[in-house]
Length: 125
Image (cartoon, rainbow, N blue to C red; front, side):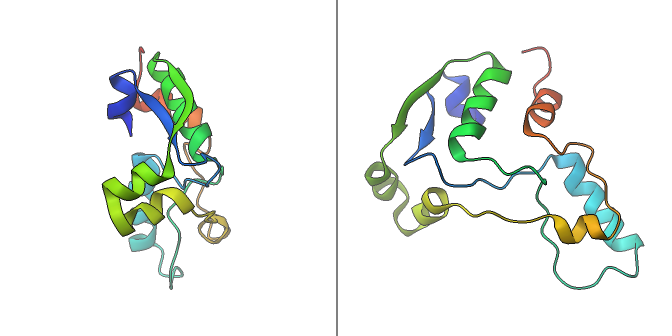
Protein backbone atom coordinates (compact mmCIF):
# COMPACT_ATOMS: atom_id res chain seq x y z
CA UNK A 1 0.00 0.00 0.00
CA UNK A 2 3.01 2.25 0.44
CA UNK A 3 4.06 1.99 -3.21
CA UNK A 4 1.33 4.24 -4.66
CA UNK A 5 1.82 6.67 -1.77
CA UNK A 6 5.57 6.71 -2.42
CA UNK A 7 4.89 7.72 -6.02
CA UNK A 8 2.47 10.49 -4.98
CA UNK A 9 -0.71 8.66 -6.03
CA UNK A 10 -2.04 7.49 -2.65
CA UNK A 11 -5.82 7.35 -2.54
CA UNK A 12 -8.66 5.41 -0.96
CA UNK A 13 -10.14 2.40 -2.73
CA UNK A 14 -13.80 2.36 -3.68
CA UNK A 15 -15.88 4.19 -1.08
CA UNK A 16 -12.94 4.26 1.36
CA UNK A 17 -15.37 3.54 4.20
CA UNK A 18 -14.60 -0.19 4.39
CA UNK A 19 -12.67 -1.30 7.45
CA UNK A 20 -9.06 -2.29 6.93
CA UNK A 21 -7.57 -4.62 9.54
CA UNK A 22 -3.88 -3.91 10.17
CA UNK A 23 -1.07 -4.93 12.53
CA UNK A 24 2.54 -3.88 13.06
CA UNK A 25 5.04 -6.62 12.17
CA UNK A 26 6.52 -6.53 15.70
CA UNK A 27 3.11 -7.20 17.25
CA UNK A 28 2.47 -10.02 14.80
CA UNK A 29 5.77 -11.69 15.71
CA UNK A 30 5.13 -11.18 19.43
CA UNK A 31 1.70 -12.80 19.08
CA UNK A 32 3.26 -15.86 17.45
CA UNK A 33 5.81 -16.10 20.27
CA UNK A 34 3.06 -15.78 22.89
CA UNK A 35 0.99 -18.48 21.18
CA UNK A 36 3.95 -20.86 21.23
CA UNK A 37 4.92 -20.12 24.83
CA UNK A 38 1.46 -19.87 26.44
CA UNK A 39 -0.12 -23.33 26.69
CA UNK A 40 -3.48 -21.78 27.69
CA UNK A 41 -3.89 -20.26 24.23
CA UNK A 42 -5.98 -22.59 22.11
CA UNK A 43 -8.22 -22.04 19.14
CA UNK A 44 -8.26 -19.24 16.61
CA UNK A 45 -6.97 -15.73 17.32
CA UNK A 46 -7.18 -12.63 15.16
CA UNK A 47 -3.78 -11.02 14.70
CA UNK A 48 -5.01 -7.46 14.20
CA UNK A 49 -4.42 -4.21 16.04
CA UNK A 50 -7.18 -3.04 18.37
CA UNK A 51 -7.71 0.27 16.52
CA UNK A 52 -10.28 0.03 13.73
CA UNK A 53 -9.65 2.27 10.73
CA UNK A 54 -11.27 2.70 7.35
CA UNK A 55 -9.36 2.32 4.11
CA UNK A 56 -9.47 6.12 3.67
CA UNK A 57 -8.11 6.72 7.21
CA UNK A 58 -5.32 4.21 6.66
CA UNK A 59 -4.22 5.68 3.33
CA UNK A 60 -4.49 9.25 4.60
CA UNK A 61 -2.41 8.43 7.70
CA UNK A 62 0.16 6.56 5.62
CA UNK A 63 0.51 9.48 3.22
CA UNK A 64 0.89 11.90 6.13
CA UNK A 65 3.58 9.81 7.83
CA UNK A 66 5.46 9.40 4.55
CA UNK A 67 5.21 13.13 3.86
CA UNK A 68 3.34 12.58 0.60
CA UNK A 69 0.06 14.00 -0.68
CA UNK A 70 -3.24 12.16 -0.30
CA UNK A 71 -5.77 12.41 -3.11
CA UNK A 72 -9.33 12.71 -1.88
CA UNK A 73 -10.73 11.24 -5.08
CA UNK A 74 -10.91 7.50 -4.50
CA UNK A 75 -10.01 4.85 -7.02
CA UNK A 76 -13.41 3.74 -8.38
CA UNK A 77 -14.71 0.31 -7.41
CA UNK A 78 -15.27 -0.68 -11.04
CA UNK A 79 -11.56 -0.13 -11.75
CA UNK A 80 -10.60 -2.34 -8.82
CA UNK A 81 -13.01 -5.02 -10.11
CA UNK A 82 -11.45 -4.86 -13.57
CA UNK A 83 -7.94 -5.04 -12.14
CA UNK A 84 -8.43 -7.71 -9.45
CA UNK A 85 -11.62 -9.52 -10.47
CA UNK A 86 -13.25 -11.49 -7.65
CA UNK A 87 -10.34 -10.67 -5.32
CA UNK A 88 -11.48 -7.04 -5.36
CA UNK A 89 -14.18 -8.02 -2.84
CA UNK A 90 -11.47 -8.27 -0.16
CA UNK A 91 -10.31 -4.71 -0.89
CA UNK A 92 -13.71 -3.14 -1.42
CA UNK A 93 -15.77 -4.76 1.35
CA UNK A 94 -13.23 -4.86 4.18
CA UNK A 95 -13.91 -6.38 7.58
CA UNK A 96 -13.98 -5.19 11.15
CA UNK A 97 -11.98 -7.79 13.06
CA UNK A 98 -11.59 -7.84 16.83
CA UNK A 99 -8.40 -8.36 18.82
CA UNK A 100 -10.34 -8.79 22.09
CA UNK A 101 -9.57 -12.51 22.41
CA UNK A 102 -5.79 -12.12 22.18
CA UNK A 103 -5.91 -9.24 24.66
CA UNK A 104 -8.00 -11.34 27.06
CA UNK A 105 -5.02 -13.71 27.20
CA UNK A 106 -2.81 -10.86 28.40
CA UNK A 107 -1.24 -9.69 25.17
CA UNK A 108 -0.43 -5.96 25.20
CA UNK A 109 0.14 -4.36 21.82
CA UNK A 110 3.32 -2.38 21.32
CA UNK A 111 1.60 -0.49 18.51
CA UNK A 112 -2.15 -0.28 19.17
CA UNK A 113 -2.52 2.95 17.13
CA UNK A 114 -1.95 3.22 13.40
CA UNK A 115 -0.05 6.51 13.34
CA UNK A 116 2.55 5.31 15.87
CA UNK A 117 2.94 2.00 14.03
CA UNK A 118 3.51 3.74 10.71
CA UNK A 119 5.92 6.25 12.24
CA UNK A 120 7.94 3.31 13.54
CA UNK A 121 8.01 1.69 10.09
CA UNK A 122 8.70 4.92 8.20
CA UNK A 123 10.96 7.01 10.44
CA UNK A 124 12.38 10.37 9.32
CA UNK A 125 9.76 10.94 6.65
